Amino acid sequence: MKIYKLYVRDEYLEMIKSGKKKIEVRVAYPQIKGIKPKDKILFNDLVPAEVISVKRYETFRQVLREEPIEKIFPDNPSFEKALGRFHEMYPKWKENRYGVIAIKFHLLKPKSKGEQK
Image 1 (tube, rainbow, N blue to C red):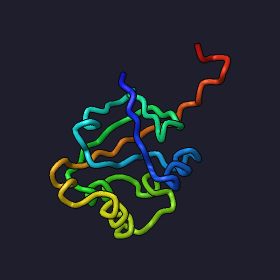
Image 2: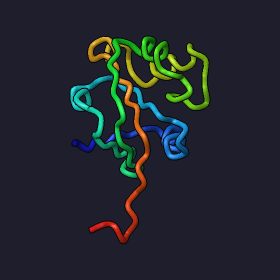
Image 3: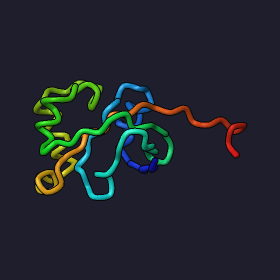
Image 4: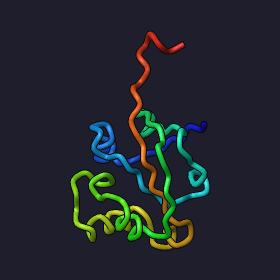
């Protein structure tokens, strides 16, 4: 089991904390392409989660065809708007070079002060 630190925009962090965002989609950079079920994610050094599954895709368009958009972007934009958001975050050459991964996760409860050792 490995711990990955992932950073998201504040608006997406709020969606993750609320439990509405359940899939994180990223370019499959070498440092995260090995992520697998049971690995842990720490979003913005604050929000712990556990990986349920990881799927690899060639493009963001493919992800949006196969995964529920509302679990990636809980405000449920249109297909084209969702695709536009990805292309604002990542240049097309990175998508083409590395491919894309969709990481399904569930939130973990942060340990209370009494549980930490």
